[in-house]
Image (cartoon, rainbow, N blue to C red; front, side):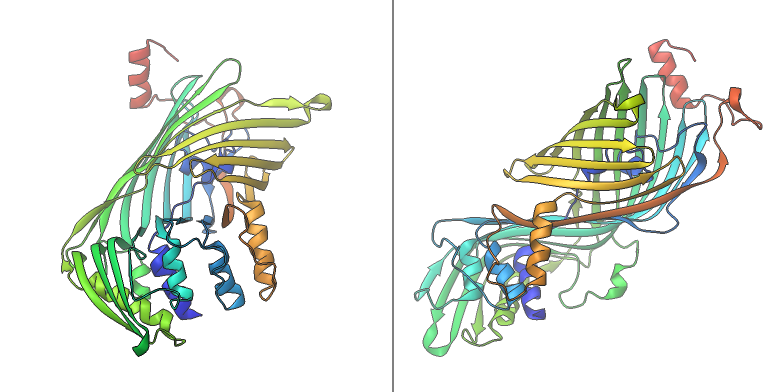
Length: 477
């Protein structure tokens, strides 16, 4: 099984990772304020002035596999065998994989001034991002290679990339007047690992009589590490692969309560050191033991060695998967004496480096300190997701847990608990899983306006940004 996961990670997840978490929009949690820089996380006259996650990770994980190969890989993982019945060979059918990780290990934010609702913060998070594409024939090759003739072309044409990095972020947020707010997050990035490949030509010559095959591949290869030399210590923050990113946010709240947000998220780069590997490959390798149990590992080793065969040590620069987002929302009070607060939010999200586009409807229903959220999303891959979130939120305490792919995650858990079940199926258009959770507290002194203060209030001195905003708008305090 370990060998199988190694091959899947190479052929599929050498593709990769990034997760958007839409259910947190307009919740005002500490997590929300770091992800959407213009979002306030403190409530004057109710919150205390220091927000902290007490080193409890706030995280989001996500995985999606779409295409005909879903059933095959689930059968192999959970039942120990392949099932190629859903594959359509020789027709150019493609499978797509996308997996994402975003974890905040440390979040600290301080409310610095009542005049302007100024907040500053620092965070440490770890992120992974990437994607991959592979044809049905590549999946077939893993299971049963005996169906092919002596020579086949193009069945290993595929591409993928992934990168993981630590992110040290510094945020600043301020209300410029009663309607406008802005925020910025400046981050230093510390690269952990990067891998990218693009196989644009492949040819296999099968020699079934001798239980072997010759594989010829041509393409491009990048790697930030020497194959087989990546160690656990490389996961720790190090400065050998530096980078930087910026997130910008702006918010406007109209007199009728409509709130709009604009965000540019994680626009940045990482410079991978000169000991990395870059190369164009055009070479041939030998796979032995086509009919043996070790065939999967033999195939992985050969494909890997061919791609690495002509690489040289060289530095290179990669970009982070930036997003542009726009949201609009409005709150309504429902029920007897307005006991329930309903806040629908529409979010539009566009990846800046790729074609990805997602539309989301987030529905928050709050009663006291309890919040239930239902989320529906639809993207350019024609994938619909239904999600749910439960949150406990008071001015000084917040806990949330949820899943943005409820149906797919439930289906995958059911399969995992019935590994030998014949019910393992294609699961519709895609298979996937998602889970997120977070916690934080507000500590310190109570934030008070001057009129309500029981002690000397915070400084009312205007910030440079607010003075500049008032100069260009002609508005005073």
